[in-house]
Image (cartoon, rainbow over all chains, first blue to last red; front, side, top):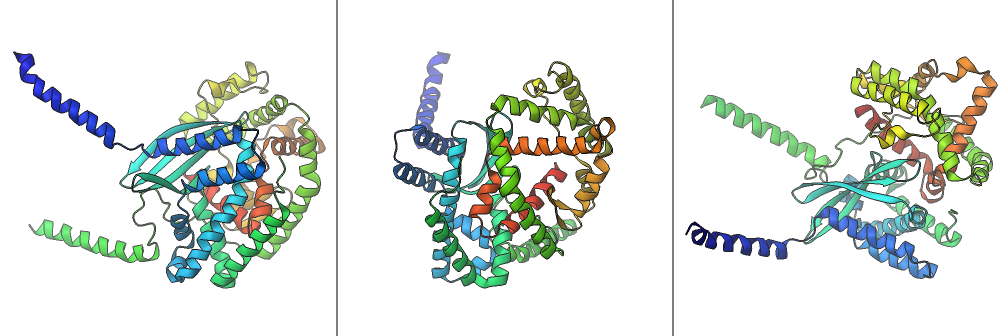
Length: 204
Length: 237
């Protein structure tokens, strides 16, 4: 009899569980891991043409990064004072620069192990702590993410306590002070052209 | 009742102040993980520092880097052992500075590492202690001085040695007294070993600096700000 009484409760529990399972989207750690796994998978595909590999890496990484949020944080007050067009140009140039800068460098980490240590979530913000374990060192890397709908998007990467955004905020801040917003955009355009021209000079 | 009123007004006062500050840092206000104040260093000697930075850059490109690339013919495990060996020799500095900051657990962890790695690790060539959960607890005198509230002073780029600050330069001088090498070897041998240590570390590194010098708009500023952030975090931990 005791058992019969409990059946409705049990049913409700089962239904609840099932519904949360359907509603639950993967958390920030799982989403970050999915992107890292996808990147590693592309790197392991040896038959890919260089150009195609670049494009696929780019698409995978761009889907997980929020370059607008990142740019806002880097420019801080300068973002507030910039025009819509300037903002748009900055986001475009900055993401292109990062892409050129880092996609080439990811390849040298293709056979390292990455541990996903833990996630910390507060409201719509999260920090996902990872550890790159190479044969000689362990490098702690933490991804800062913001929730946009079902997706958790990376807006800062903290490598050994050095925040990417903070680093660019101060170094770009100084260029902004000296050359103004247009000056910064001009230097970024110039740098990008130079990198395109040299192809990929970073050798392994 | 009065107390509640007082508390409430205090609360509003603080939130008003907060609102004011939030205007400056309008993007950070809702972010529990953001570092509110960016660590930066004063740089009154920027023009001299930039000169030394330029010199170091050329030294790196034309001398240190080619040598490091040459070292890569030696199998990686051997170079990792060399790096472990030097790291083990650095234990006195870490012990002294953990002790000076009264970080006793970390001090004993370093001593245990020294014991394990000098014996089972064959004079420090291997690092079995790390796999037993005893991680390196990095401390130096610059961090110790910072721990007691002394600021960086200002940014310095040292010839060959690279980024530093007034505080960290003084710390470096102090640390050299507990470095065992000068007591056992001639000065030129010590310098030779230090160069070997640097070259070996460069050979293991994945060309971090190459990426910075090629890709950043202003590598000097990028390195300076990274150094400032990195040291600030080291002092805090």
